[in-house]
Length: 111
Image (tube, rainbow, N blue to C red; front, top):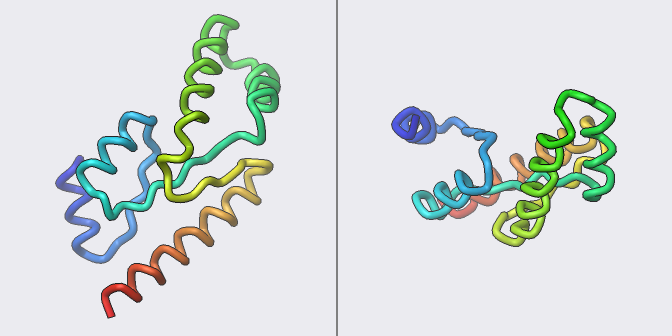
């Protein structure tokens, strides 16, 4: 996978990876120039309500997921940008703007 990411980056393409916290930390170590974006729920309470509303996991699984989410939320400072996912469309719009601004910043550094 790493070689595919590098190949795409070298060809000028953006690469978006949906990864867990440890994966993001590995990316940061291997590619410090990478732009890391953290997608956060509005609150842990809202995340709990969303997960319960979906009803796709047993209570035990949901509790493990919420515990992990708490650890991940505590790590937000390790990321370059934070998008609070109030709604899917709002989060997607913010993500798009962050990508565009990052591209512009990187282009400015190359000039």
